Image 1 (tube, each protein chain N blue to C red):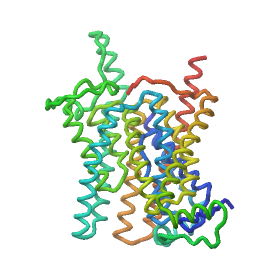
Image 2 (image 1 turned 90 degrees about the vertical axis):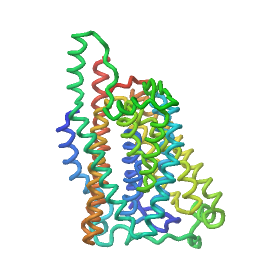
Image 3 (image 1 turned 180 degrees about the vertical axis):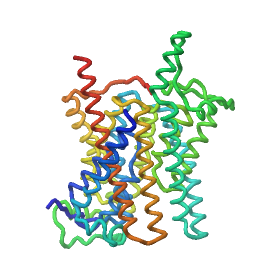
Image 4 (image 1 turned 135 degrees about the vertical axis):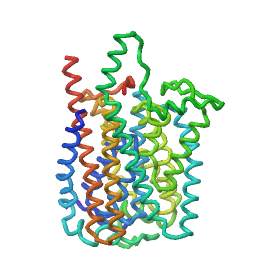
Length: 107
Length: 349
């Protein structure tokens, strides 16, 4: 890769893509003095489930009452979703011709 | 419009932003063999996550995304399982020592500033080393050298290793061990353990996963080819991610809904990033890695300026530089993948 080209692309797109957070959240939110940890919600060890329903209620209730089960569910969900999404993406990439096999390790 | 309620963290968050952050960190994670926690944690924090949830949610995402990426690197023969297993064991010892030092320093006073200065020094030091190495050992120069060498003697050239790695390989302290997958015939086990203990110590001291420290250490200190360093590092990232995901969830620090949406983006990104390793040569990857950590260093420098001056602009600028770097490096990796793929297709046709 041409070094100069990589640096130019990086700098140009850096200036351009800084706009993305602004588009999503509005300039004032991102760049105001309240941005960052000051604006964050406090860490709450319990969730108020009174206004929740369905899956949100189930998860929040589990979070409040059985932290071990919550940890097991989080780990299993992450493992299953990670594997499943990777499998699906792999299928799409294969269909596009981007199949990978053992490669030679050239520097 | 795309806001969703995150009941555990108690906030509303833009789902597209979660997927975008996940996608970027996935591409970079799969491509560089890092977890990307140093991008996600500050990014989530900037957009309103409490730091405690940001770290735990990020670790859960790292765990999920690295499963697919590790599998893909294994398929490409990029994982040295023996070296990876040693790295996990030695890193744990180093990590414990690093975190103990932090606890001792915390008793003495404000440790945050010391950690940030060390972080800065490490980031800029690593990027300088990698830039220097790239321009010194430019692949074109190597090609010319190899051509002239082959013309004169006809001998085949061995893999190009850094001087540091060559010195480490000369240490003759038994037991000696070989890593055939990485092309290492013989190296002292003590030297390898020391390298990983050191990288573990740094990650414990700085409070990071350590992928961005381990990957260059594998390349420059142990002499592993870049793509194998990436795959082997991802194996360690997967192990630490699994542990981190479970323990942080136990402590109630994981926002499962946010992690879920981030993982949709990151597992797609990780597959694309891992595939790109096939199409980009080791030196190209190292150059992009050097650029990435140089910008990350700039972001930490801005954060440090904010701590000193208390001018909020610097904190926002730090976050924007970090996010901007992640987004544009992702674009570079994808564009490079598409260009190289098209070129290969043309050659085949």
